[in-house]
Length: 486
Image 1 (cartoon, rainbow, N blue to C red):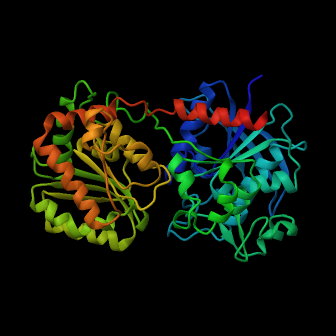
Image 2: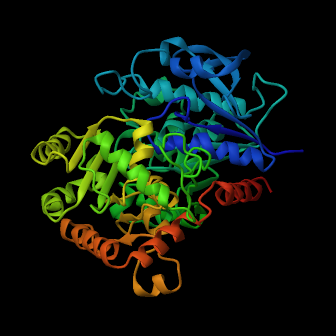
């Protein structure tokens, strides 16, 4: 009999996305299903989600939910997949203008504790003896990030579920901490509001609840599993994480290889592969034309697709970008975030027409074209639990330039002499997270790009020939599930 897994997430690609969590939640269930797991996703019924799912039907009504009392449970399928999604239809909570976490002005929804408390509570109910679904009950509840963190607490303290819970930590920086009155509103026992529970500096912490009560913890890369047990990366929860250190499993994310594959990518003017790299030059030319950059095959084109935040480290690029442009480089950026960073990059673009292109916002086709058309991809994150863009860079023969942290350190092998000789080199790793460290790393890459063409092609091919799919990661998750239930 196949293992039944309830995969709980606040966002799932292609239904709704704000970041990497959605990519994982869209890809991992598909890969696990391919391994014979009977998996269903549970997520909020945002308007966009309800509009996109096919064959949506009512399968149950869930009772005794905090604040709202009842909600309908709908079942549908993600188009072009066999993955089933259970949607919590609660109009007052989820069907509104704006994103999953914030309104159209970027202000966090004031009722997020209820919105994601209900998501967690429904997960716990579905894994209990009083589930309204009689023909499908999970043995594993797989929670993701703070939005689902209360599920393991409800399962242990309220709903007495026999199922095992696991929480995957995608980014410790977001913890879902709220004033203590929410404990009562959400129907949590007051006894759990302590150091040995979900209390964190006088607040109710969704993430701490998940870490404390889950039967297993995973992170999205092996390096991040160790990093979060330190003060630099644990965001105040490193003590609890160290206590549970032996139970934390780091599994590197994969990428959706049907979506991200230079041989089949429909967003590219010309497809290419590791054995037919010539097509990449045509993609570069088309990208230069599209972005109003000078058509120059020999100008190294540096690319960035990123949120513009302190975490992503792109402020470290600003002091030296003009110098790189003056030396003959071009630069293409797609992203958005902190207004000071947006303005700084836009000012440089205005001062360097034909050499710098800055696109504020998000554009899926352009993200593919930058990834394929650029010569190198810059990703100097100060911390990066896993990161997907460096994996896309590897797949597209666009060597990543990264900081030695989290999943970046786990996936990018520096192009030093030893790694070039044993053919494992696939990118460039900074020695330190600073403007000078980034510049030195870029200069090293540029030197190789200009003066060692054969080595550069080998670095491209090394990255492109790796198996970056979800296959290996899904097998590790399945092994973790099997260990839990046995």
